[in-house]
Length: 358
Image (cartoon, helix red, strand yellow):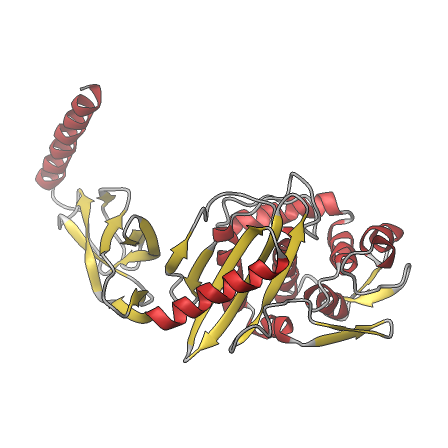
């Protein structure tokens, strides 16, 4: 399980958050993101139509007995309707039709999904189909699912509204939104739930209260009601116990990085976004912030050059990580300055080498 605050990405709670497990229908969030991105890039249009193959109809449609939008075999359906069928009805058939329309077959689409996941920084995710139907090749950690949900919410606000639609009718069959958490608590407006025989029951959901959005992911539960109970419990606890505070304002100095061969021996670092964190209202959090970068930074240095991140730990867990950028330019230093820096690095290297040998 994991609970995060959406704006800052700060982690409020986690348990086995980096363990890759079967994502079940939560994988459809990755399929949706791929389609959203293709629509935004102009590679496809919402009105484009894809054919419902016999494979998609038989394995994902009415004959399969699983969640379906009841797409008719050999019919042509617009991408806009397929998205609603996948998001509102949790339809396996709609996800398969999208995959086949975009990549020719699900396996190839899985390769494309995995590449897209890496581009988004989802390191514990791999895919072989578009639905999340049981397959050893489908793996996601709950941290990756939470990151993906946050990305979808922030990057595609108009498409995200689909997750809050209460019903969808296709082929004269009206279905209520299959997300059991949508009505479980005030402010809930998405996303999706699922289950597999081996992976258990899981859900990713988001809710907003008093202007604060939290995202929770739970997975591997034994009972469908437990995912609702546990997710709601974590959300309630998060809204009740935490408040958002800004540690560093945008463009304000966070710290310094060492410069090699420059007119100055260091350069200031700042964030382009607020470095914010959800902290306990009781003040019981122990927070530690550290600047992490590969250094020293080689001169010349341009203003706005990316140099590492600031990581904030809550106890033993990283609560938030934000990129840092240089605040000023640093020109190349004198010959003597460069020689001094070179000698300093040589001495430091020898000391490190000796420490490793010891």
